[in-house]
Amino acid sequence: MTLFSPTPSSCQQKSFYKSYTSSVSFVQSRNVEGPEGLGRKQACLALLLHFLDTYQGLLQEEEGAGHIIKELYLLIMKDESLYQDLREDTLRLHQLVETVELKIPEESQPPSKQVKPLFRHFRRIDSCLQTRVAFRGSDEIFCRVYMPDHSYVTIRSRLSASVQDILGSVTEKLQYSEEPAEREDALILVAVASSGEKVLLQPTEDCVFTTLGINSHLFACTRDSYEALVPLPEEIQVSPGDTEIHRVEPEDVANHLTAFHWELFRCVHELEFVDYVFHGERGRRETANLELLLQRCSEVTHWVATEVLLCEAPGKRVQLLKKFIKIAAICKQNQDLLSFYAVVMGLDNAAVSRLRLTWEKLPGKFKNLFRKFESLTDPCRNHKSYREVISKMKPPLIPFVPLILKDLTFLHEGSKTLVDGLVNIEKLHSVAEKVRTIRKYRSRPLCLDMEASPHHLQTKAYVRQFQVIDNQNHLFELSYKLEANSQ
Image (cartoon, rainbow, N blue to C red; front, side, top):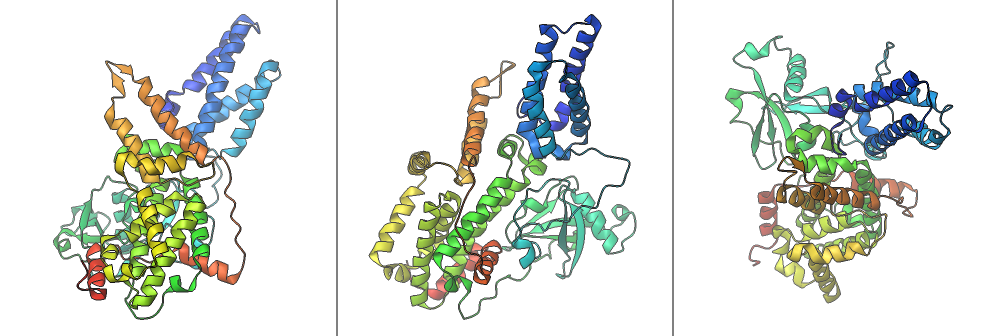
């Protein structure tokens, strides 16, 4: 078994179980407690500890893992009294097994699972204020699936559900016949973006919920009505008046951004980075938390552009630019480079950067500060400036996650995993070093001093459920309305 081998394959092989039980038989058959039997047991125990420590929560998805590890655990604990040298490792094994909630089916009916609100679905204050927990493929969620007339049905589904499963739930809600595939008007599932772009999802695709764009929605329709599908009306209605961003302090916004993104970053298992690059679409079930974090980065970028372009008063728009630059500065100070990057990229959006009259009114101090920020996010020389800054930071910190994926992709596509039938150890060592770096970033807890008050909760709710315009054409329309002649 390799470090990045998926748990199902390693569990099906039952390599740990066979190794340990064979060593048990070896010792019992000779009726000795010699060093050879002890050495084999210690090696198997060390491998099991490493396996548990690496996968942890991911083992909740595999019933086979629960059975095998439970059997091994009982065998190992029996040997604790026989081998004094195993005691330290068995104590650590006991602690790990207690930490990992193994999925072991029992005869009794398990308690009903809590249905988790998915990112951006059902914008409820109570759900967005809760601490984020990691999503697993078996988690159940509520989701809306829309019809061509923009009516919708709400279904309860597993996060890892296939398109076929989702359509089955929709047809049941709509009271279609039991065998819709035989009907000429069988339903298809389509992801429709706010720009009008449509993607027809294949029946075997799974985990489609976490791959949707910011303002994309699922539509169920017949093939005849596919071409007529149009996106839902913009979630943000352009109206005069100040939005929430004008009423909050930049320190509060920046701190809440950092706190929320730390929660999301902590939910991403380090192996999701490897699965995302090595397995692509086949790893969707294992990369749900990573994909949600990437979507959040895009959401913050569009939030900055949306707020600036919805501000019609020139004076307030200048103040808003100053506020976002302050937010970026505080995020950098918090060592939250994900938020820092996202805010700077939002200000660099073409629809915002073209507002020449607005930028000219910005005080020189803020112009210079923003130029420094742009140089830090400059991708030239393989993001040299960013890499120099982050190398000097100590944990806890939130990196710019897309750059980690870029580095892993370069490692993966730049060299073969197998060379002449042999494993490319140098490549795997480089990948492992990236994974260890991610672990290092999260090796210490994040501590932010934020007051507990009604105003604090209001700001927290605002930061965690942005409503944004992600249609670039619409953003340009707003930009030209503000400054028609800017170059």
